[in-house]
Image (cartoon, rainbow, N blue to C red):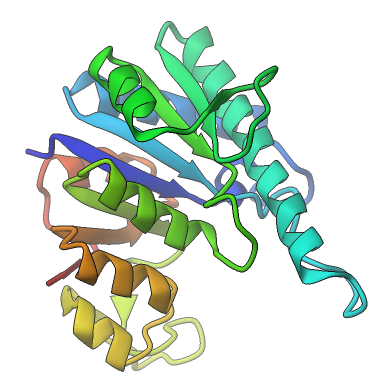
Length: 234
């Protein structure tokens, strides 16, 4: 049984399946319900939100990359506020923490503040990425897992786990149920950024669980120890 999990969710988890639109109220509620159910099992939950349903990066090569990344960080804050609102409406406890100072909307991220909230039964929505450009939310999830002494990072994807090649374009792709951090780096497996794998390896994060998030029940199944997806470990 896990004590503390960092759950990495893409922004697209909150958007319509068609891809047209920013938020789907039903999907937002399903995500919030699943997070709340996970929290009620006794697991402390930190959620790192992506922002891809709102912002996909610079739309012209002339755009400054740092500015584009800052816009992406703001998109993750919007998503975190959205999920937090849904959790609270369902009777749960949630707090949004941001890597940047925006005290009118959320609390500034500090390790001690997040741990105190988790110990009080709150879901911690960890927004704003790392606070720096050129780092993805995957790397943010690894960083927060290291800072908060998490037992695992849960990474949801649109496929069943880590494959030896892209299963969407290679019908002979094989699902890898066990992968080491070193193998993930050497084989350049694209399910997470290399920097995220390296950080988890260096900081001895016990594991990353990668599984299909199309079925949100997989979050609970993975947390309960079911053998689904891929386990990436030292």
